[in-house]
Length: 268
Figure 1 (cartoon, rainbow, N blue to C red):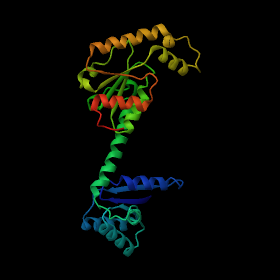
Figure 2: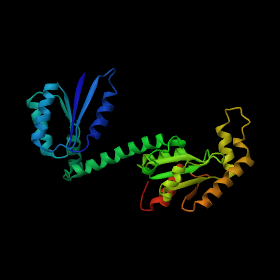
Figure 3: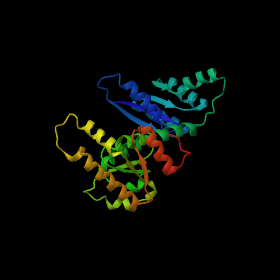
Figure 4: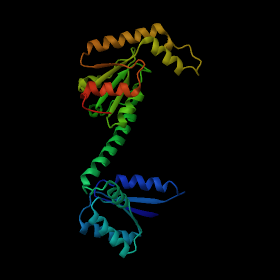
């Protein structure tokens, strides 16, 4: 098994993404990644690189400080370690183009990496909590979306997750009481999606166009009853926000939700 060492003064996520993209071009690769994040001491770097020699590892690194990059590059050259400076050449070229010296602040890269990791975590969270699959850890949600079937709960949840928000979405079914866990969390985080009954019928009909069914799922009278049930539910829970998704894009719905829950200073 081949070994790749990733060295970074941030999280190492940027190097991981680049390497995975490159490795996708090779069949049946047997590679083990070892990540060394937030490394800024030359003594610590030297110890890691000595271990890389023993493991015959390929070394990839993302350091924003020129002195650290030159140290790693020099050590690798002297000891014949195959290596790649992922950021160095790009920073140098951009510096020439922009006619500006780089800030060389690892904290800036950490913010980018941490934002990326937060989005990945949020997407995993949203998928795990999609369509009422689980009410565990609901208190950790940034937003809890309720709504009838086909009111755009899942697309909205996933769009918000891509922006880094942890979202739970739960279907409202008049015949099935909502979980008691919903009433134990911060009620200001709860948003109920509603839609015009006739539009909702069209959405459901389009959904079932390839299925032969006599289900009341698309019956307009039944849909009106479902919508009235949701309205009564929201009247009883006055702290829930209500967002009408009729003829709205997912982006518009998401923006309205975040404006309601967190204020207009958060941009999507």
